[in-house]
Image 1 (cartoon, rainbow, N blue to C red):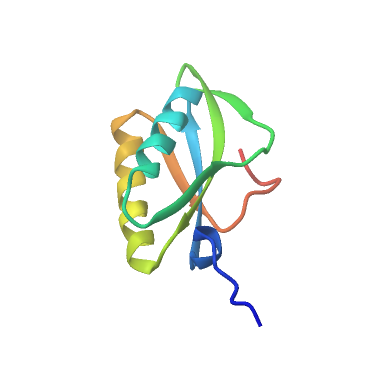
Image 2: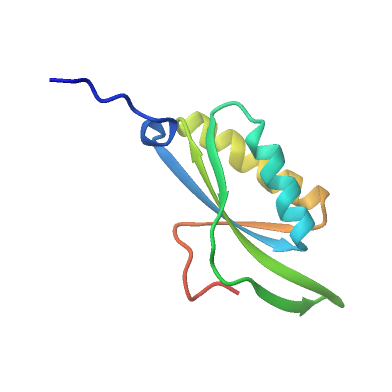
Length: 104
């Protein structure tokens, strides 16, 4: 019997889904920041259709980001960081259980 070696994704216990409302550059910046955080196994933009809308006089895109994290403590740190970073970048971060048709 051979031992199965788990990948980082298989070992991750939590998957966070973040909907970012802001321009594409802000979503990419947040993804790069998340990659560097301790406890993050993977950061990936989901290939869902990008929604665009005009809010507060600006053109905004909606990006869907999935983050695999090592444990509940990492999930909490990443949630607090992502929400704060989004505000500082003049974007919005919404944490959802799943991405679907109800997306803006």
